[in-house]
Image (cartoon, rainbow, N blue to C red; front, side, top):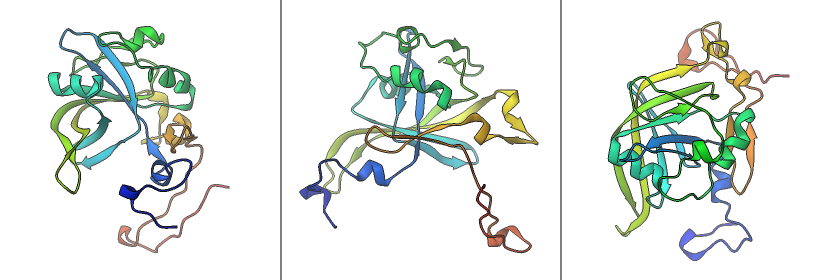
Length: 210
């Protein structure tokens, strides 16, 4: 099939988010202007640069996390894993402004080092960020679409020591979650390694785990 999004897809469910999958879950913690903590998962999230490390999340509507990050200039990304699925899902509830998802969902927090927002204590990795860019998205006609991109530079990294193995972060051991569209999720439970032709030496084709 082929369709133009402006004319609709004609399917019972929109395939867009299922095609762009899997996507990391941006589990974002912030503080509002009064110092009240907020925690929410974002489906549109990813790393956008490595030197310096930067990541971005998009809020459809100027929701609490986006508004807080813009107002204070800080946020924390918390890695969401299979073990933390229920907590992450509970933190997606639509709560009134100023009500902390940490408290409402019974999620323990831990202090950050370089930014004020707390992090999720049970997360195996957390990235403290300072906002470097934010913007409202526009469509091809130049009209605002009520979507807001927040880009943060990573200024501090927390990693639980047991997930560092032979000098690498053990992604499979952490079992991070990914969003796959609709109400579907995936867990990283296996990986394979393949060298690029530019890595030097003989090119090795992909070797999937068996």
